[in-house]
Amino acid sequence: MRLVVGIVVFLLSGLATGLVVDAYLQVAEIQSPLETYADRDFGPLYHADRSFSRFNESFFLGSTNEWRTLGEGRPERNGNGELRILLVGDSFVLGHTVLERHHFKNVMEADLEAALGRDVVVLNFARPDFNLWNMHRYYRDFASRWDHDRALLFVGEPDLVPSRQVGTELYPISLADGDSVVADYSFRESASFARAKRLEPVLSRLAVPRLMFNLYKVGLRGELPRVVLGKLAPGPSAPPAELGRADGTEPLPDNSQALVRDLAADPRVTLVYTGPVAPRHKETVSSLGASPLDLEPVFDRLRAEGVDPYLWPVTGKRGHWNHRTHVAVGHALAADLTAAGDLP
Image 1: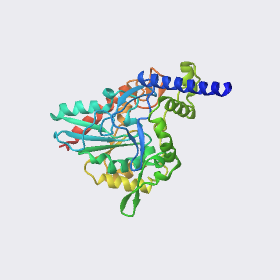
Image 2 (image 1 turned 90 degrees about the horizontal axis):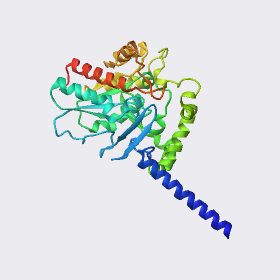
Image 3 (image 1 turned 90 degrees about the vertical axis):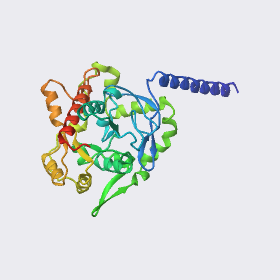
Image 4 (image 1 turned 60 degrees about the vertical axis):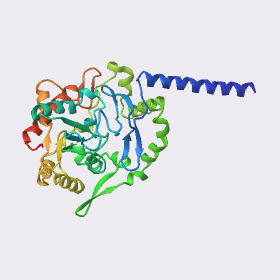
């Protein structure tokens, strides 16, 4: 009997200690619970009005709004007559590495307001692991519900020629069907989505399980030695896949061509190249009626100034756009949109 009582006391003590540690992690904003939930129509969506923190290449502390988007947010209907621009892209555009005030969208807002003499609001609808097939669907199903004057869809070579299809397991995609584009919601039947639904009640409320999950992902990426040993870890951190140069030996996938053609027919949509895109694929995109903005000259100017657009000096990691790059991207996009002369 004493053994049973001892085991019960031990388990209860461990549970109490775990809950105290979890509460401390959340109050101290060291680790927050999962900020998203798995939606059957849109895939992972933000919980409304939730603050959360991240530490990847840099520290992020931000919050969602009542409309389930990141940052300040706005209602779907534009009752103030402001110029509205939507951003749809992957984790580079999402910006879980910079504070909200440092994100390039705020630079865009300030520059455009000064140039146009009117209120400008830029809303961030980016999601991690997105490619063109996800972006198209997310824009049509969700982001386009918001009144807007322009939507910028950010794509690189891995987005135009998807190979790492995490997005098909957690998000809906758009597929060509003859001359039409249709929605594919088969992600609902994937093992990844089922696992996300099972873990959601725990990960959305507790910080410790989320912390353990993050450590697991760090281990999968081979970054655990750098996290534990810091500067003593052997070798530099690996750059993300988006930095790789594309040879463009294969034609642009038929499905990507259909989606580019569909987007090019929408006067409110502008594609933006976020990295190197094979010349052959650029020619195809242009032939389909799109005239993308290109951020590669921005990165080239930063490199000429001795700035690595992807290097975070404090952590010594290469990954997403750093603060200098966010500022440069914001200025460049505002200048390009102003020079085009077609903003209302």
